[in-house]
Image (tube, rainbow, N blue to C red; front, side, top):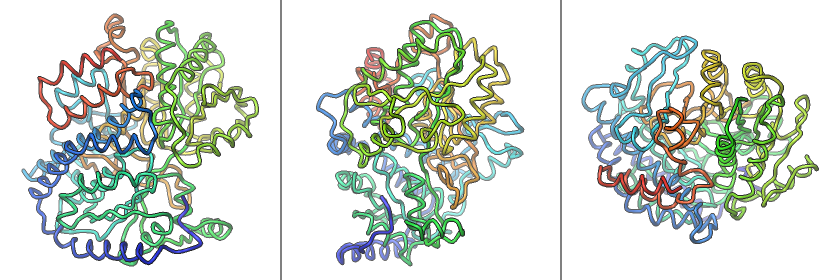
Length: 573
């Protein structure tokens, strides 16, 4: 949606916004008076409220996304809705407790060297539960070159190091696609930046208003949060409100520019001149065109099939309405198994459960892709574009379709040569820097050696995932989530700043996620140290609903007795 409407909000909407901002201005003093122990207690209460509202949360999400009763895709709403809020509040509370006790949130984590003179914080696995439930998955948060481990520890905690020094009233423009985003963004504004928050819901998610009010009730009652609804006119009035000191948004670069500079020729002129119409600090998590780079190797037929389902998930999870959904698969034209892999990919696209195009504008964006690529193939309501010209690939690399559209780009070379060219192409020709996926056989990883780590370091993306989906980085509360640092308002790409980051690291550069190449039990048979079956976020997972619900309940109250049912459900997926 744009934020420069031709008409203003209704009188009642103006009054609601004015009241919310005024109440937060008073509530800021109450928030400043909340010491660390009180803030931790509030997080624990939000955690408990999330557990109580989980069923209602999922029902509301299923309703607005129009998912059929009994669809395995309902599992997505468990895993991307209440589950990350439960894990996020627990991890953030642990960081607050570390500060309470006079330590650093990083004290519980190890730091290791990373390529290019970097220090990395190992954030996954962290607990025994991580090692059991996410066996074979790991995540590190890399700091910029030159930052020492001592500096990382001394600066972690951000604004919570001086909780009485609040930073005014912030606005969060809530996302409409993934239902945990608005709540997690509110928590980050409060705890990382010490701003009280007015959350403006995306109209698509208005059905979650009651749930969010109940989940955030502890923070609402203390005067630190208010929630408002309405269309673009309300959002425009809110972000320009004189009582607001900061704006955070989730969406697209086009939406960002409309809010910051305005629309039409006047907005374009302001952007070119660097004179934003919104004269206050803005942070953002925006989308882009995310690549999945498939490094050639010698794969079995089962490997080809599983990784094709993996790539289909990169695109089709949540219907393709994810900021980090992969839009282009990059493969080697010299890979002898390329055609078999693409055949499995077509099958995976065709067999993925059907779902309605719930997100506004989806059909128009699909039509735009088909108009640009007349030879594109329609597969069970999805679009597959092959035969992109590497020299002139067209809009597939620069236009975020935010719809079930997937393209294939072929580049020449064996594993090493192909990887070099794929990294260069991803950095120079793709729009956005939110996330990039790499898939490689363990033997190929071994053969590439240090060159693979160097390639990961060279990729300018906020999350890099090897044999995992970048969405795992989103689901890891202790990881940072956002664009690669360095963007500006007039060249925002995938955004400015980070969110999640429950360890409260100061200025992280990226998150690097690694996962198993094969699921269990094949992983064990091939000597991989992973017991993970097909992940519940796969669009082809048959038991995603049960597994997602069980994982959510476990995150509400971790206990050994809950594990057997989770494992049994996951292994049937």
